[in-house]
Length: 70
Image 1 (tube, helix red, strand yellow):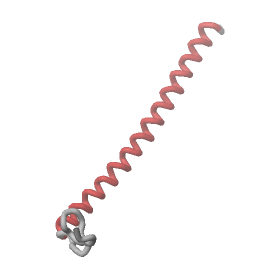
Image 2 (cartoon, rainbow, N blue to C red):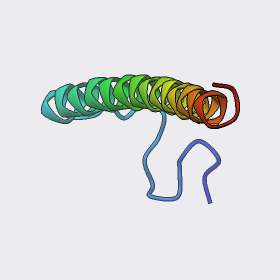
Image 3 (spheres, helix red, strand yellow):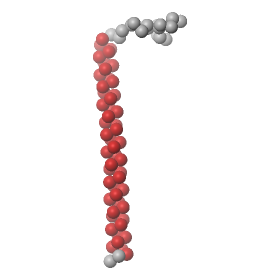
Image 4 (cartoon, helix red, strand yellow):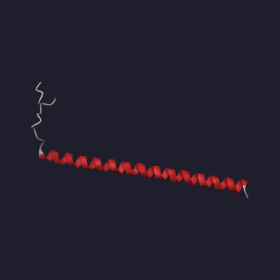
C-alpha cells in the first residue's frame, strides 16, 4: 500500500470537488450552530432548574412559617 494514499486510494494532493467542499463548509457551520444552541439550551435549563428549586424552597419556608410561626 502506498503510504501517500489513504485507504480509498486518494492521495493528499487530490482535492475535493468544489461543490462538495462548499456543502461540507455549510454542514460544518450548521454543526457549529447546533452545538452553540445546545450549550445555550443547557444553560437555560440549568437556570430554570435553579430558579424553580429556589421558588419551591421559598414556598416551603413560607408554608412552614405560617404553619408553625403565626
